[in-house]
Image (cartoon, rainbow, N blue to C red; front, side, top):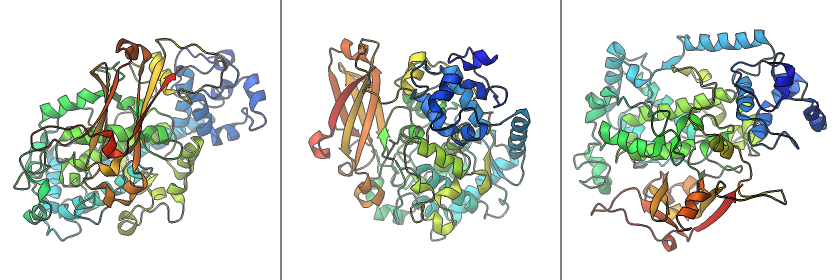
Amino acid sequence: MTKAELNNPDFSSIIAEPVWDNEVQYFFDAQDLSCMNWALDLGDYTQVSNLSAKIYYYVYYQIMPKDKAKWNQNKLFSFRNWLTHGCPKDQTALEAFKNKQASIAEDSSLRQRKNINDIQGLEKENLIKAFQGLMDLDNNDPNSFYQLGGIHWYPGPTYCEHHIHPFLAWHRAYILQFENALRTIPGCEDVTLPYWDISDDRYPEIFSEGPFATYKVPQEFLSQYPEQAGTGDQPFTPDGSIKRNDAATYNAEKWKYLRDATHDPTNTDKVYLDKIIQLPSWNAFNGLDKNGNFVSGSETLMHAHDMIHNANGLTTASQDVTGFEPVFWLFHANWDRLMWQWQKLNHTTNVEDFKKNVQAAGDSTDWIDGVGLNIIDPFTKTLGLTVDQTIDLNKMGVNYIELPLPLTMPENFSATEISLSRTANKGQSNKSEFTLNNASHVSLRVKNVNRLKIPGAFTVSVYLGGELLQTRFFFQATKPGNCTNCVKQALVSFDFEFENERLQKADGKVKVEIQLSRADNEGNRPVIPFREIGNPTISIRLIH
């Protein structure tokens, strides 16, 4: 591309591997340099690379450039690809970065975690042997499957790191400790924990084999926790066996709420994982506002996580006992893999760059490296890890074997959909004149649901004119009041976005229902009255 073309806000295509000297320095024209010279020199490589996370945040959400046409999606993702490759100054730096990444994929000193569907032969035998070995240990052994599964919630002590900044860091440490335990079983010293790619319709055969299909919680557990066993919507059978959906049921439930390039790709009421990892900030990726408070939007990793916990079966749907479901560990290795994908795409694989990304959204980074604020017990005690020490996965000795990073926009996204995700200050305007029409979008927020009043995981659904529009899932324990983190975030909110035209076709009729995820003894999921959960409010705004 010529300098003039690179100056232009509208790129005809995405540049997969841009470098500063040849392309990126020309992304900014004379007007940009003049506008920003009070803060930084957009013509200086060092200054731009140091502030690349903030610049990307500003151009993504169309805060910049000021007083001129905004960058189109192709230019936006071209700049993001520069971040993905470590902000290379020239072709030499780009090739050095690519060679380093290639060497990491071949580094035998790292635990190279694979897709479970690619585990065969001796690897599969040893994985089964390692899982069975943990299950055969005495239940009081700290490496036993029972003790490790119980860390997630019950029988305690209670650890709950969900819907907050350290959620993924805590689980990254958790599955590392589990993987360490797998490697203590004789003959399994080289076992790695595979990931279960939930977007893959090939349901892993291993889930119907050996320890993955036969594990039972001990009877003394059931006697202490009797409400967890039964024939209804309890997470265990009376003999302590797990309850997991079969492959057909799981996939059917999953695709009710997920989409991809081959499953209902343009249905924006569903979650697109490939879109989530493209979001520019840690907060947006997770579903946290700029103050770190959880707000459940449709396409965030935390919402997708909560949703699939529910789709997999009754054992994983209960936060209290999900750690006793053998597939939980492979399930969470996948969320860890998606976090690492997001980190690599957004140049946040080390603490310094990760903090820059969080700060770009206006949030605090004390939870990352603040003394006493970055503890992720019990793993700070057992592994010596704090949040900052979980940021660089490769330094933890782990890597994921997977397809190359996506350096283009996710397929099948409409211009409107991308535009909506890039709109800052939704429902607000600093312009004195604008036009609203049926093409405008509506933002509906169910605000301040008191989660402590709800005994277990629940859903929030919006209906237009009597028809279901979207559902949000919220994963929590049966007794959230026993959790310090839950008490700190007692009030949670849920966002829904849809076209104004759909609201008009429904004659403006809106209904919100909040229900327990688990059915009662009659198989019903009663609607919870607002008065019983703190009288949450519903606000509707037009996005223009």
